[in-house]
Length: 174
Image (cartoon, rainbow, N blue to C red; front, side, top):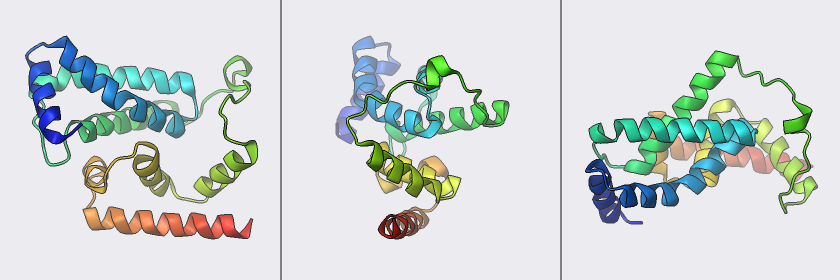
């Protein structure tokens, strides 16, 4: 979806057009959910945060003013803040529940590859992991990431480059 289509959909959604809101939902939710699942490592928690993110976005939609990065950046910022708020409330500890957490991974990716990716991500700082998630899981452009994290575009580009170099070095030694 290009920026012109997005602006028209936002305007229609602001006027109460449910079809326009549904189109926005359908275009953004898959990447947003992937980002949340990767960030929280809990599908059920990701679903809850996804829901609260969209509720806040819909409630605030009448006041939304498009900026350079657009609606998707705005909603990813809300999701990012929802995650931070959840972690502040719970001190980042999620109690282990065998019914929820001890389920087989239905992902087609090999377990070895998943372990390597997890190990490579774990060597990064929380901030760098967030950058990698937003860039490669959420598939956001660098300008949007800069807006979400309130960073300079060049800073984002350099930090992503350094994080990837660190991950490559880790993977090449294993």
